[in-house]
Length: 127
Image 1 (cartoon, rainbow, N blue to C red):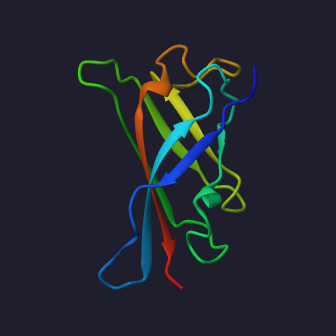
Image 2 (image 1 turned 30 degrees about the vertical axis):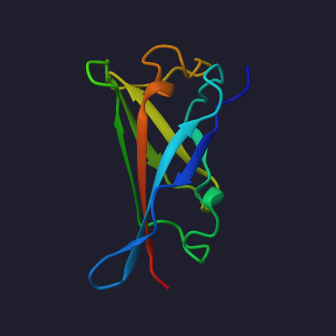
Image 3 (image 1 turned 60 degrees about the vertical axis):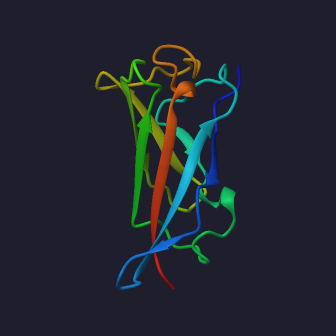
């Protein structure tokens, strides 16, 4: 099986803060095929998939990940973004019950993270 990848799509136009010093980009996040597998340390999360979102090569100041499931469904996993050295090589880590998802485990196994609705907000310095 292939290693899972993240797919990002811009959710709406950028929202600026009051001082216009940062810009927030909202995305929906999905994973590649449900049978693709998790890699220890996280899944590569390329923030440039939606284009040159920050109009620069700046790294995000903050990346916030929120997830929900269908009403009544189990929601045991949580997600954490780990900054890379570029916008292209950050990692999205998945944790269930306080432990990282098992290396080589299919994305639809265990808590089935493929069923989650995931939103990501990346905050960049405004140029």
